[in-house]
Amino acid sequence: MRAIIFAKKSQRLRDKHSMDLCGECLIDRVSRIISQSHLFEEIIIFTKDPSVSSKYCRTEYDATDGILIDSILYCIEKYRRFLAVGGDMPFIDVSLIRSIISNYHGDTIACTSGGFYQPLFTIYTEKLYKPMREYRNSGGESISRFLSISGIESIDADGNKLGSINYISDLYEARKLLCNGNL
Image 1 (cartoon, rainbow, N blue to C red):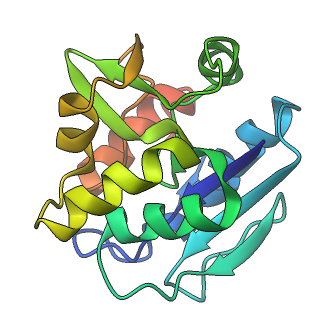
Image 2 (cartoon, helix red, strand yellow):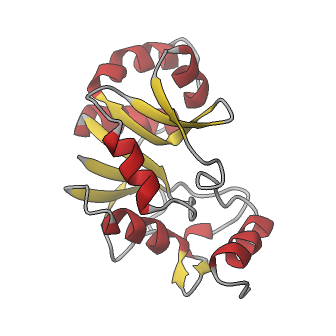
């Protein structure tokens, strides 16, 4: 199985994937943690931002025209099954990755927290392609909503591990929690 890290250009926090977090850039932290799990045949950063790369994996340019759901549909069509991870999720760890992999039995499985389906910590499979494409063609844009109405299997995860960096305050908080208080 592959792990695909989705790292779009942020409108709220420019260049967040290259920002320092505990002595490494955010995207390196996420890809390193995935790499340390030793569970994937390949790790790919899928991005529209040509400046995003990591020493732990290869980068593929996202040439889709639309939003995240279009990128995920493209990856399902190309790779058939993969773990989708947000490139701005510095709190993931190997135990969380192993948990979703050990609960995977061939069908799409998502992590949830507080009833919210996390689209960027989900294993997608080709079985989901057609219903997701139909949802998108009917005007649907929210992947989380699609997952919740589709009866997708889920595992409840620690919401703190699924947190992402969207604002400078999120980055400061992550530094405080992950870097022994060093800002």
